[in-house]
Image (cartoon, rainbow, N blue to C red; front, side, top):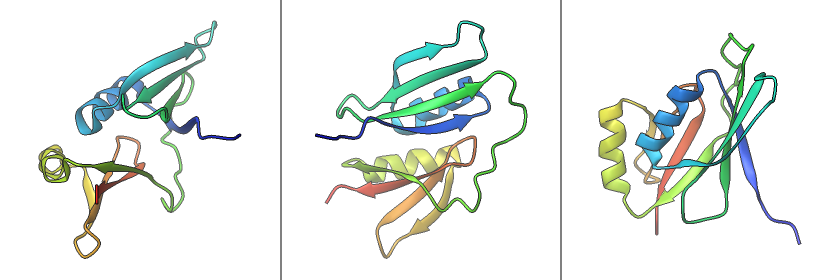
Length: 121
């Protein structure tokens, strides 16, 4: 058997990203790993509902923003609190694209990764 474990985003400012994910999506650290020499830190975020985790990787010596190409990839969340989340994300100013005909929208995190918000059907 094979099952998903986690997906990785590399982040420039770990604390800023952790705050964003907690406020925007309510996902919080469930485990961490730090290099003995302090060169990197991995923080795994969970939703408390599924086993899937988002791994945030922070590299000590990284100073330049990550090149995300054309942002043709994204992470998606399904929610039964679509309207409430949309209002929260509007207030945060992180909505980058809306598709009303499909009933979805996208937010962006501090590093420019896109996250799709899909209403539960």
